[in-house]
Image 1 (cartoon, rainbow, N blue to C red):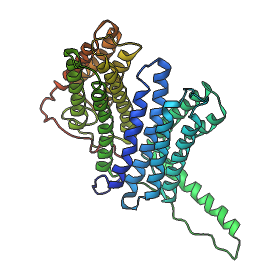
Image 2 (cartoon, rainbow, N blue to C red; image 1 turned 135 degrees about the vertical axis):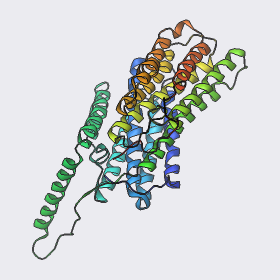
Image 3 (cartoon, rainbow, N blue to C red; image 1 turned 90 degrees about the vertical axis):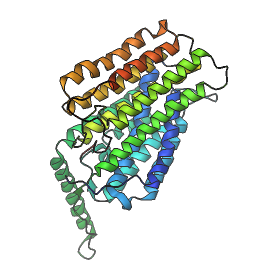
Image 4 (cartoon, rainbow, N blue to C red; image 1 turned 30 degrees about the vertical axis):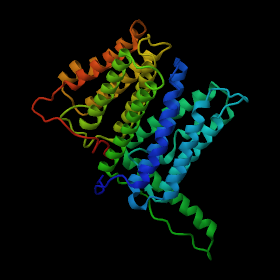
Length: 407
């Protein structure tokens, strides 16, 4: 479909992002002493926050100057509640109980608010239908009456349904738009029957496909990357405070900062695929958005690992910290590999740069308990620098997230 004229993030959107900064920090703290169930729950909670941010970002993207401040502020407050409740999900408080009910209520409210606002605008978001139709919200509603661990399995089902529904439906936008128009006509017919002869029903316009502003969406996705990279900086700085500085701490901090800079360069200078010379223009939203979720979740996990290692740079990473650190980086590079393949990357990049940088962090994680923390971070920095060493043949490197999500 056609794209709207280029514009930039508004002050309202930037204000809205402030609460996401807090939410990412709260979720990263859950990985300070990780177990595999902790990691799985982190993914579910992170998806809930990311999906609300995505829903409202897409809403403001298609509505532009007609974005309702009230809808954005409702979402902002809802994410704030989710952020406050996140540390106490699956953790009993001193007085007994958890804040899971508050997290569920805030999530459902935000999703329904965004969906209703889009529907009232008379547009159908065919690029990412879960935003408007909420396919994965039903399991969250059912989870209100479930107990752990069934509740968490229902959250996972909601994630899967959202992803599957959006990917499958957005590949046939005309079919989805036709179904929404049929539903609108049926609602209008019911209103006509209820109105009777003397009371005409309110006329309704036929739903139209929403038009994504691609450069604006690319900028918004990039700003979210900045948020999670900022959390990585915060983790390193905070961990370095409050105790004597040593050579090992200096090495860990320098390697950690270098890793953050390298990830920034790959994502925001080379583009969402991290492939120099490639253009993401024309990349479909049903490909770009799941990759964005995986990449930012991976960076957040890596940030949590950096904080834990910097706090004890001379010790061997304990209790799964090495796996959070290396696994998060591997997830980031795996999503990059998938995008590169979708964009037609050459085999040289795939087999000599992309695949090794997916496998190498896992290898580092496997031996992390035998190494000092600063050495683990240094090895992961070396892996990331290897990806940076790639140069596209016959192309100029550069690019951005602009155009990373065509409708």
